[in-house]
Length: 591
Image (cartoon, rainbow, N blue to C red; front, side, top):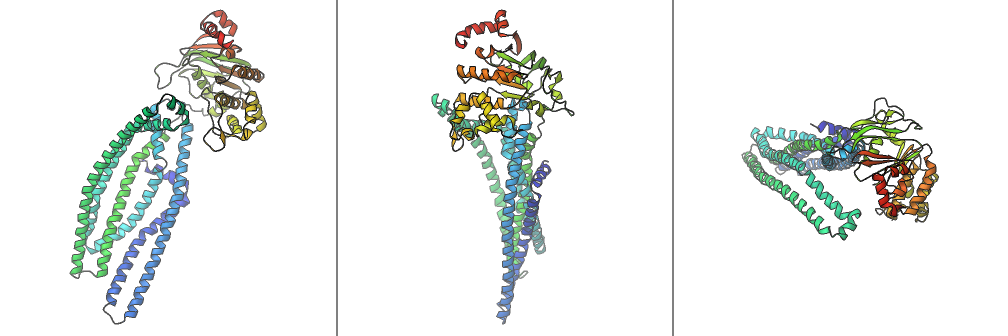
């Protein structure tokens, strides 16, 4: 059972609000009994007053009881409003707290999980249930407690009247609860089974409504295709869900009909006792109301318990995600990362295979990256270049072999400290819908936002002039998501990402296709300005442009996850292998 675990999360968010909510709801649990008894007294007093001469005295008694009943009603209103306010406040806090837990877990887990479709199913289910399930459980328990107090009082009254009426209360409610439990299990199993179809439908919805896909959808006339796929999936899900609801409704029709017959049969028994003088008119009204409320409160209790039973398997979705364990873990006693790096980075017979792909991405790769040098990686798409960079950043660990810095395995370092020494411009860089200065500063948030440093990085990335022409300069919001924002061209976005990479004072700088969206003149100027930055840094360059890689000190050619050639530009031309052939084929474009 995950109920206890969920409750600990809920109570931890705001213990004071939780306690206040409990107190209010327990008071509300006692009030119905008091109100019911006051109504009985009022009716009995009025009945007596009809047959006595002193009407004034009888009226005063009734008036006092009415005033007390009104005071109890006001207290009930205050408790209801207080409980609602406290409950809403607590619910908002819990929702934000759970989302924070989900986001923190999403950051903590390894990239390995993102390679696995099952992870996305787990995350999707957790995101669906997490914002409301724990809070729903807490409120359910409070409601069960409140209803239990009221139901106990009502059942006590009914038992005093006649034991058979007490039994009738349970007969009216139990079949309905059985149906609820049965179909809750069916619904849970169905939702787990269709998780992937639900994700697919949301994916098509995302494609149809997102700017990134808008151009191709119109150019290739894909709108009707994706609309149909979305509609087919939603139709299938809707049909299956409605079938469960229809079957449940038919079962509930039977159980509730039985419940109604039992309730009105009990009413007839109470009337029979009143006609034969066994109880007063006030008792008649009280028992009528007590029976109705006893059924209602007992139904609330059993529904609450059934709801907790229903919540427990759904909570498994949340905790299934939260219980994912990271694969890339820090050592108990990490070794400090060398600063500066002296002997360089070495890949020693490294092999690596992604969990969802049969073939190896890297196979027995040995490479050295020396400080003060620019090293280029060249190869076809899928040859292992980016995978090699991911291992260096310790986003993954090698399947076999090791990656070392100054002879120390990366697994001996603290991961955050290691990544703090590395700055990367990925080919699929991120476009942050934020101000320009923040876009550049995000590479090193351990330091305060320094505008001079940011301007230097922007200048080195050949983007400063463009930024100065923006409406608010470095404080201009980029993108299209928010008001008063400005969109940039593909090349300008890449320069912003390049500036972000250069803003970080890192010992290892990795550039993955850093100028793919730039013109040749801009590329030449950027690398001219990059040269003075090398000094004792390790610069790793991934590019298909020979105008970029030919200036590297050493070039490695990757083919099918292996190193096929290595050397300087001139050495590789003399080897007359893959690099030389490719260079000659593209020389007219790149020279």
